[in-house]
Image (cartoon, rainbow, N blue to C red):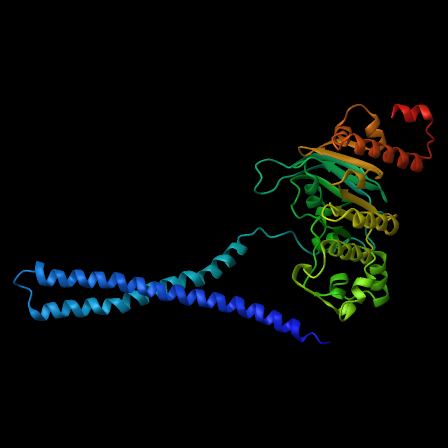
Length: 396
């Protein structure tokens, strides 16, 4: 494919790193040897001064020679001992890392027991219920979520908002059991997720993270890790996120290699690959963890349109970064200090008093707040087929 120069450049880059490291180690070894020689020279000089000027008449020539011979032999012995000690400490770093991994608390069982294994097509509805759920991280002095109660019906689109540290991402950690809840339950279609294996749970929930994750390998492997989809479905998913042209221009197309961390893709393209991956999984539950926080508005709009089209019958939970991305949600969950403050339809929350959701909207500025009010009103009107007269518009 005429890509020899790419591999040559990559090899030269690795070779330069290796040579620079070895050169630095050689320089340090020489400098260390010179330092040890200087210290030993000072010691031998002190011994000679002692023999010549400070010793008494009992110091014979044989004793003086023996003392000098032992001092000279000490130079090589000292360097060897110190070098061996430094090598042992360096090599023991690997052992220290392994021991650190052995101290990590293991996760729960990956596979469900036969009597608790959910059906193959679970979940069928995507109904999620949090019942008195509390969560505390091992390094946290206090719970980050306290007695969380809310219900997400099948097919609903839920937006989760709150200030920094309110516990938004902790909801996702509890849903995926990245951290086990300290109390309460999380039910998906009536099944307590703590009673099933992690693989059975996590395979049924798609996520588009804030930091898009791509793995070193081909485009095909990043879209379909277990080779369960045909090329037609892969290209169809890429077409849904408008990546067909970009992938078709790569050498090898679906078999083109993705660099470590997806460095040969832009942030927006990596996010779209994650979206295509979720489309292929076709799960009943989709989680967006501030998926559009690091992309431009055009890519944000494309992601939102694709989600509304391809996941219209799925349960979607969105961690909000921009309020305009969740203003059209069926419901909004407002968190503060790990507690549920408000939960309801965006337009109703904006109309009712001076709640936290209304405050967050007001803090975006008069122009943006007015736009968000109009968007919430428009989506409420379309969903519930409510007609507003001019008097209502003026009061808004």
